[in-house]
Structures are given as structure tokens and as C-alpha cells.
Length: 124
Image 1 (cartoon, rainbow, N blue to C red):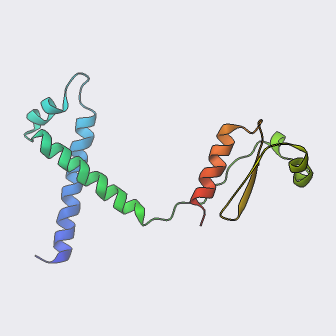
Image 2 (spheres, helix red, strand yellow; image 1 turned 60 degrees about the horizontal axis):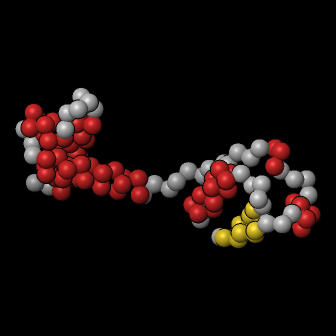
Image 3 (cartoon, rainbow, N blue to C red; image 1 turned 90 degrees about the vertical axis):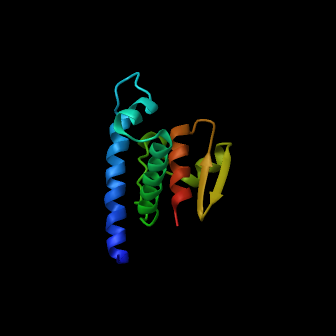
């Protein structure tokens, strides 16, 4: 069997397993994984093996993709006309990382700070 044929077979198997996992995850309320597995002729250990393999394949497929650039919306009321004088007059914390500098004060919204820090973390 050629490596291309093996790859195609592996992809088909992973797609089949992903369908089974979706089916199991949408099983009736109150039905356990063990019961679902018994109804579908697989062992609990085999189900979790398949779940792990499908998750690994998903992670591999997205690991090569470059994350899209994100634009963080900023509410106009928190923007300042003169950032330099604002920083000098407002006590706070200056954070510098990867060539970016952020001035944080006690009034900085935490959701905005979290979004900005996430963008900085993912910046190249």
C-alpha cells in the first residue's frame, strides 16, 4: 500500500471516528458513554482512543495555520487625544512586550486589557 493510500485511509477513518464522537456527544440526556458505546459495539477505551486521535488530528491541522490578525475594538471614550500627557498624569502601570507598550490604570476595563494582551501574545 502506498503512503498516499495510507494517508487517505487514515483520513477516512478519522472522519468516521469524528462522526461517532459527535453522535456520542449528542446522546440522550442520562445516557452514559459506556451505554452509548455498548449500543454501538465499541469499548469505552476504544471510544476514548478515537476521541484522542481525532483531537490530535484537529490540532495538527490547525497548528500549521497562521492565526488571523485581530483588530481589537476600542470604545472612543477611552481614547485620549494626547496619550503622552495622559500617561504622565494618570498613575498606573506601563507594560512593554514584543515592542508594544500599554499603560494600564485603575479604570482600564479588564476585558479590554485581556483582549490587548492576547493580541500582543500572538503578535510576531
